[in-house]
View 1 (tube, rainbow, N blue to C red):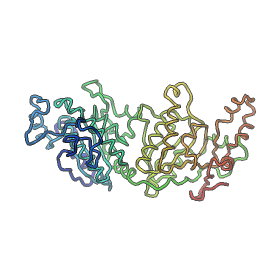
View 2: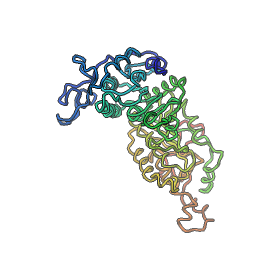
View 3: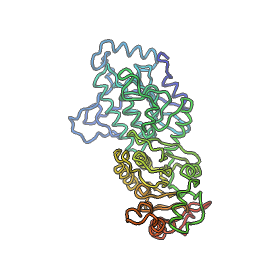
View 4: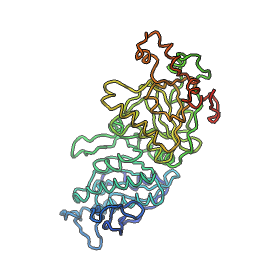
Length: 482
């Protein structure tokens, strides 16, 4: 391989059991919007004016323009050399593959072909692949390695980014999953569309990933930095990729019908007083979110970050397999939830809803972070985003309060009509100490305030706030009020 990187077909061979390449040809429309139009995946163009510009499709091979749409000197010769060196006729290989027993459309970039650059024919091939995925109800896997738009084709090449974005949008609207794998390098428009625009983003360790490549702004930005900024879900080695990709496709294509209430894993006895309930929830040794997720799922995979530059380690989100079906989860870990945590959880709920996957939320927080940094990062807007994501969800959302349920920061994670409590949890409008301060009471009255807030699990059931109390070693359908 001249570029010293794994070729597209070698990588496909490693991650897929079988692969059938799609026949080469532009995904064109004969509708009123020109030779390509604005396809909606069904062969019918968007209701746009007939004068709406179409994206450039691949060149007419009956009258070849060897040097491309700009007549770039020597471009035809460059294409011929790229084909001779790689055996490919374009920078992306598209087809249907069996990945871990799941049929998926795979698009793999061949970096040896002009640096995996995006030209007009690349856009046509990608459009054809995504249209095939929608027509056959298949998830899409993008194995990305590209230097960005193809300079020799100029602005017509740049316009392919809008063309690709259109396909991503239509595929999302169809309720189909898209997983991207960031190889070295993933830069420019390839990162800003297929890479960052996927539902789940997996990054190969050591890859250069960023909008600006190393020739534009050296040194190149790394996938590790993108992961730290919440823009990549998982970092993998190349050897880990086949198994992890197969797991993700299984998760995203096998939705469950519901998210059963988890077993309670801590105390079995209910608290005698409000203050006892608070102390139980604040006990350091009680089971936390990681323990609950481990017990609930056969196996699970996390997502990372809010896609806006933030990560909250106090919130765990992802998808897990339980009895052969997938349930999504968003779990608080006992810390004050930061804006990035709310946004990550909202992203998770929206994705699960779009894919028809039920959601489990685990509530455990003293409340939302309210320091200056949190306010500057838009904590109020982030909480609102989580509230509306849960409220808008069409899939079942089940909530179990496993510790502290502090005010709106906790309630944002909760499905109000499907909320359950554990014996070592509480839920309150605010912590007893802060309620005491707001009411201008003596601090010593915090215990009394806790009782008056009626925040115990049994109080909340009686008030109709919670549906019931989950018990230790009890099946979910037996988790009832006491």
